[in-house]
Length: 240
Image (cartoon, rainbow, N blue to C red; front, side, top):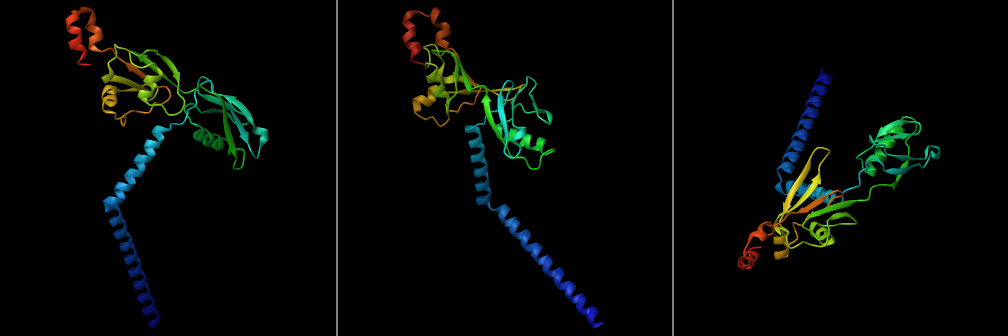
């Protein structure tokens, strides 16, 4: 009987300690989650990471791109492949794998996963050989509409300058930036470049992504100019 009593007391003590530990942990988590400073800091980190991804987008594979695949520990699988029109590549010893719209880190993970079926922890490196160079398109009321190479970080106002700047007929306050979201949707945003340049504030000057198209429309003056008396032209120009 004494032994049974001792065991019972010990069990109660262990359960009490476990309950106190759980309550303390719960209290700590509640305080941490309720801490506005910690929440704000977490949101700031997430926002910075998203901004970084937006500012430095990785190149994504498309049909016609070619690259070399090197296996550090299994060189017999080294090969050069080209992305087919349907987005697939044919791998030695594996077969067809879809890789279109993947960036290099994603492609590396895809190939590692595919080759783990026949290789033990493969070490793979990818080198792009032939791919579409990043570009943007400038259209509308710019001096030199066309397709331009996108080299390094380029903003909307810099792209307009590369295209020769605005024509006299341009509507500076409604420059459109088109960006493809997927195969079905394209986003369109309007930027008041006239206001940005007038105030000397380029904080809202967006960074271009590969494939972006900017379009500068005509202003109202350019549309009605042929029908205005010469005496009214000077007055009208002051509004632009």
